[in-house]
View: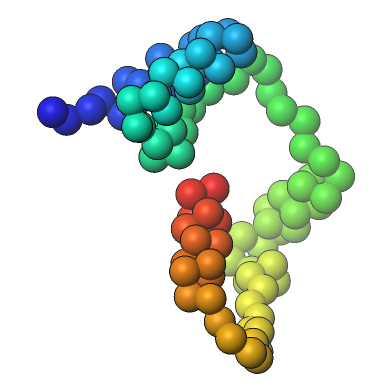
Length: 97
């Protein structure tokens, strides 16, 4: 049976905090991993205010939209034993954000 993950996520987001706890408990009892559900887009209640740093980024982007000034890259050199599974889970967690 195929689950409607989007429907489950939307149903969850409409619940009160108390009902959300009950809902999570029910999903866990059925062996369903809540982290696999998609993130539901919320309706904007009002306009969000940007921080000063965000305003600065936006302003500079308006001046030169094609600039790569904020595309930063880097490299790490690791030594010692590498726990591949821990590294994989870390990247999976970042991707899920």
